[in-house]
Image (cartoon, rainbow, N blue to C red; front, side, top):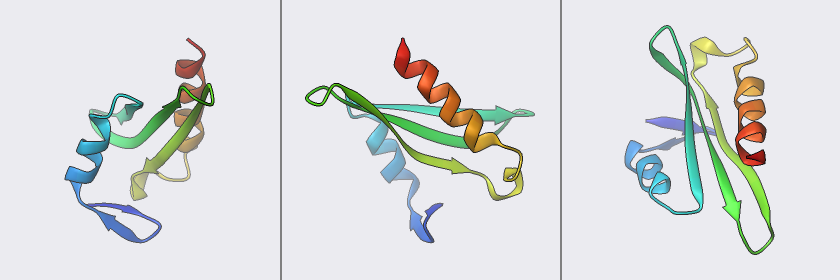
Length: 79
């Protein structure tokens, strides 16, 4: 389960979102373990990209990985 704001999210919910054309999923890996997850939501009508679902594993928090994920999202959306 993935928890967001204290609400469990079944893995299938995350998997289903990744299949949508306007969503780009990314993971952060540290020592061969997934420690972070984030999505970019592309809105063609508004001509914008929005970072979403920035999730960092509890034992990996406090290391700035959420900021790393956002920086990578900004770089990816600029290309």
